[in-house]
Length: 616
Image 1 (spheres, rainbow, N blue to C red):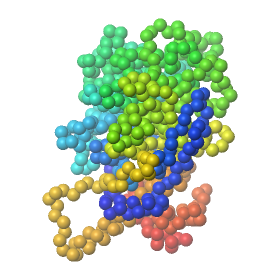
Image 2: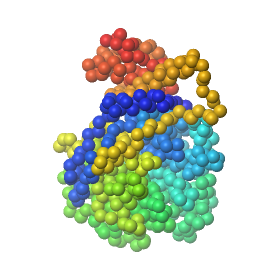
Image 3: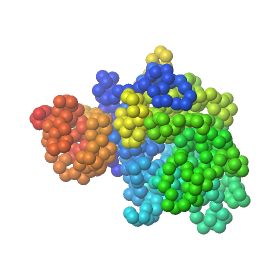
Image 4: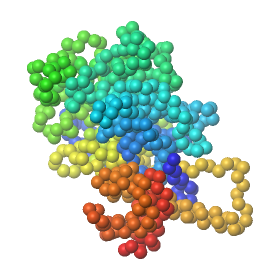
């Protein structure tokens, strides 16, 4: 376990630093009334000036899930590193609670995915459970065969780590595309688990049959053969078993709650139990759905509404095996199934982003990034209450991967329909993956992907692979029209002292404690400043988790034991690495080196500004 405790003294120091602007990394927000990214319809941009904005933390290995915990800390999963991380929502300090060693990971869709916290976590009932979804490999390097599993962990409060894994559901379909993988506990105390269709019948997987409409037989359920679970939303008891009140679909009761989904990466619940799911469309028709038990949501026969607009199901898996995939230009030898010829009853989405007519010019833009979709990374219901963000009341929040914007979709009073078009907030050149809301309802945290393609905010190309805040959590605090901040107090990762611990009484002990606290505060300050600087300066070449990429790895690198090694290299450069001595001052270099020397299992101690100055 890797732990960085932030005490009250160090947090107070960090408050002063943040007030001076040293760590409050600026965000380049696009604040025009219309959007930089073209949409087939015009939507308004929100009033970003109502919020303060900064980077809370960076260097995360593709955060997938972030959620506000009962300890008033952010709990996160990092897809690429397999880590469950706890993050101080004021200082950005990180603490690793678990690192998986039995998971599979690829460029975009495999790894550690969704997480759900038991509602009674840390309440003293013994239900200190955390539920995780991740992929794992059952094949070989030459013939990979990934699967996914849902696992329950117990949070060990004393040691602050996740232990005692219990596998609740294994052998779930997975692949190199569209694994979805969100998991939430509903107000009915059931687990809801979203599963994509692994990109079947699409792109590089165009010859794989799409199973989103496939339903299991009673024999398959009895044999725990989950082949038909692709493209579904599951509903499970907390022990992984099939609830007795799950819908019978085609005469069979299974874990399946709804079916006919493409890539449902978001799920959340309204105050009355309404279940909202966001779903990635193909070239058009990202969907916002309300789930109905046993409902069929149409994929792959239907995208969005049953309207025959800009989509027809071409079943490539039924075409000749030597046929090359050609995207929207479907050859005559591929069987075609128009939407309106699909005879099954389909549940319509409550909104699509976006539905266009057949004459839409898909070839005239900047490739797939300019197609009429926004790529919703997740969904979260928001109610403002008495003191929250009034402009967002009774809405769902949709962080977009393509546009780097938070779409706020208002709902009708009963929550069953979308109310008009969404508004777009916090436009940056990033890929927004997930959101979390603070306990006071005034701060929204947005997790960003570590890499990938997004809409270009500044330029003429239309798309870019340069993300401004990769692998980060961005923090937007509602100030309101009067500019009043939401929260002045910091939150500590350090465990509270027990009531029977008597304070030191003699002057010598007090002086020693004060010295130790000052030293700890300085280390914490350097470490957290270094984390932010590492994410913006070093992570692109050395990897967000220090595992190396274009530059060498820092994990297990014994050269870090030399106090002068990193400082000298950062100042003067080495080989292909450019010098940063003219860009970074001594404190910034000391912060970066302190962070690197004490992260990812390294324990080489701090570097001071004086030691850096000696290498100038």
